[in-house]
Image 1 (cartoon, rainbow, N blue to C red):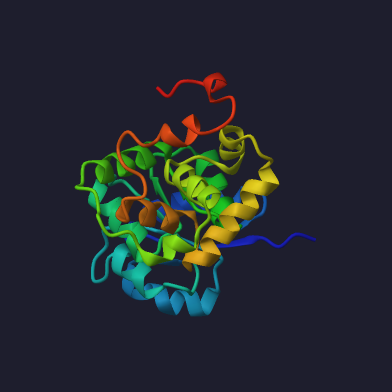
Image 2: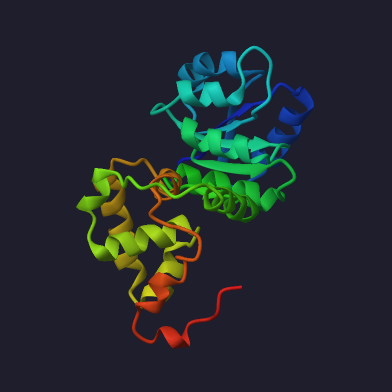
Length: 235
């Protein structure tokens, strides 16, 4: 018997919550266990309903979704769902501890998949948001100080971290590095453990904040791999 993923809806618009409930209650393996009308109600709702994943709006009265996410750090996983895709919201949501970020106009199947991915302990960003987040960091001056924690990573682990920061999945990283999916999964797990990171989202933020990946460096990992001339060109 498989347990349902328990979902808590947090949005100040009752109609939005109703729509989300109707959508998710019909999805196999998901169960909406409660709702909250703003961030100030979230902590009590989490204690009461014990959700696996929270769908969190950002702009709400009294306490917004960013601050609510900060206060929930370590308690449960948060998937930010909002109509606003401004870079500062994405960045602050990730810094606050969110495990994923989707826009409210995402298709129903994408939302359901996102909830399952986050519940399974992975992290997720809408592809368009990943690209814009990377572009935002790319415009910033490079950091000259690399965190000491990165010194604990092997050269291959640094390569994997760069590819994670580019938004590649484990399967895509395996293809880039000519290794098996299980090998990539092991590398990612070790990277998160060594750097004391919760998930891939935090790894992306660290990689760009530390200057590990810089504009024009994205192709350098591929160029060092055997048979790199056979790899597809970046678009």
